[in-house]
Image 1 (cartoon, rainbow, N blue to C red):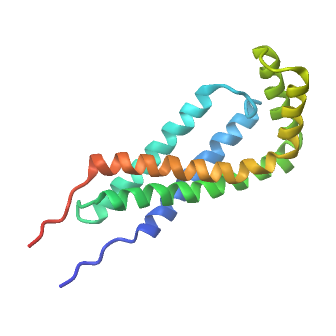
Image 2: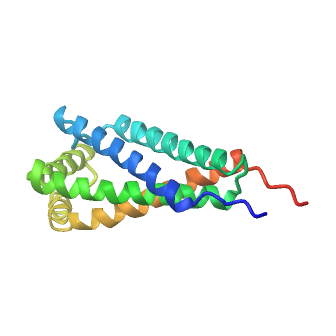
Length: 172
């Protein structure tokens, strides 16, 4: 008699939604604290820890539902799937943030980049202005970049989790 294996897509969707909602809540928290445009690395670290925790939770739950067995490939697929769903939610939230919640968001990001470039002192004023204009005019490119980086991070976390949590089914 063949056992039914849990569906990777179901786990990816469920835990991707969980990660996406947590990410939106974190983003709204940053927005209410007026920290959504800060270049503070602690925001990135916190977001990465949350991402790793939810992906690991999803992979662990899949392993448990699969009778305690997990392959590296399943873990990588789960990591990528969870990150894909969360990345789509993140892109939708970023669009909402930039066009509804804070219509000056893109300008604030460009101003922060300009201030950092001036402080660094390695660029001429023309180069700084080009960077500023490029940020304003090409901000839309950040949406696919968010999605791509999200998937890459999910692949890496899934691989690491897969290497740690793998357990092959016995051949008999």
